[in-house]
Length: 150
Image: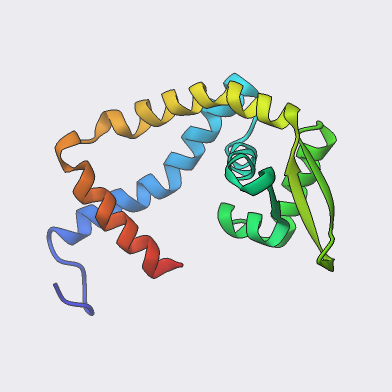
C-alpha cells in the first residue's frame, strides 16, 4: 500500500464505509440511550469513566481526555449531571486551578440502569453486524490505530 497518492481499489470502499460508521454510529447510540434512559451518550460515557476511576472521581482534565471532549464541553456536561445530582464537582485540593468530578450514588444508579440499554444498542448496531471470527484481529488493528492517534 502506498502512503501517498489516491486510495487503492480495496482501500477506497473501506475508507468510505469507515467514515460513514464514524459519523452515524455515535448518533445512533446516542438516540438509543436518550430515548430509553434520558441520558445522552456523552453523559453515559462521563458516568462510566467516573465509575471505573479510583474513588469514582477524576480531574476534569483527565475526564475530558478520557471522553475525548474539550474543556468547555466537559464542563457543560458535568454541570448538567451535577444539576441532576449524578455528579459532584469540587476544587482539586492539590491544585486550586483544577476541578474534580465525583460520581454520586444517584449517578451510579443511573449508569447501572442505562447499561443494559447501551449494551443492547452496541450489540444491535455493531457486534451483531460483525463476523465473530475476525473480532480479535480487528480489535488488535483498532487498538494499534488508537495508539497512533493518542
